[in-house]
Structures are given as structure tokens and as C-alpha cells.
Length: 76
Image (tube, rainbow, N blue to C red; front, side, top):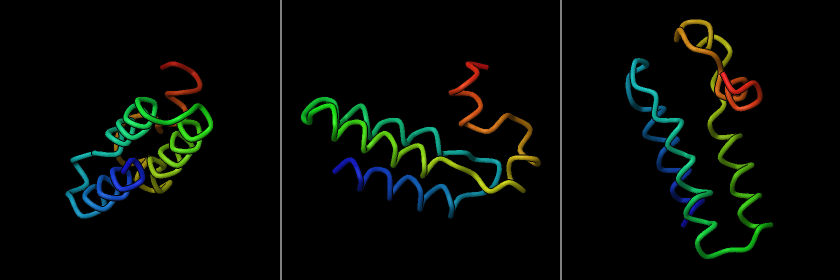
């Protein structure tokens, strides 16, 4: 189910307009996973969620906010 959440959010994000960013919603998947799975599975789903949340470099320049990975690392 958590991987399906990531897939659905990613597809809807790709199909929506460029002004709507649904990528951060993939954080729901690791939260749901933590409720019923162990730490290894939760970490795996978290890594998949981070990979799915990555934007194209051209989109990062045009969207007006720092990329998600920089936000997570530097706590902007």
C-alpha cells in the first residue's frame, strides 16, 4: 500500500499543472509504513519516497523554492 501511495501521488503530480506541487505528499507513505512495518521496511519506503520527490533540474530553477533534498539536509 505505501508504494501505491507513492505511485499515485507521483502520477497525479506529473499530470497536474506546474504551479501545483504534490511531491511533498509522498511523506505520507513512510508514516503509514511505520504504523505496521519494521524499521527496515520504513527506511526503504522512505528512500523510495525521497527518490520519487526529486524534481527535474529545469523545474527546480523555475519554481521559486529550494529543491526538497536541500530543505531536508539544511533545514531551510
